[in-house]
Length: 152
Image (cartoon, rainbow, N blue to C red; front, side, top):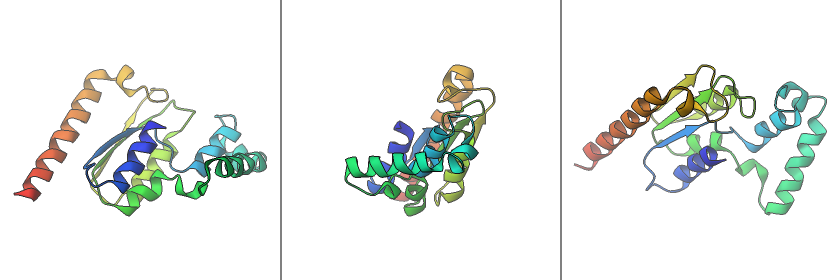
């Protein structure tokens, strides 16, 4: 949830100049298919178990009091061009790389994607600690330098 919230917050708040997001969901609807498909077979959530996914979304929408379609990091990165480093983990069955690729395709700002082989949901740091630090710190350093050059 944190990665999706960070992406959606950056779209709404220009003080957020860049985001690193690992294992984000593309949209609530897309994530519901993974959950309805038992986090292994999203095609089940899109076909046989689709009524269950739709019911989850409708119920959540009713409880939250706002449209479920608005819960969409995919739409957020398309609404404002800010730098993003998107990380997906190849062994993630909770929110597979498909979500990250959807977000990356929609992003209007500078974007990078890092696909971490063998890592589980939100586990890139545990699988490749040195590379994680290098990429994340390098990304933020470059984003800060770009931001500072635009201000001067």
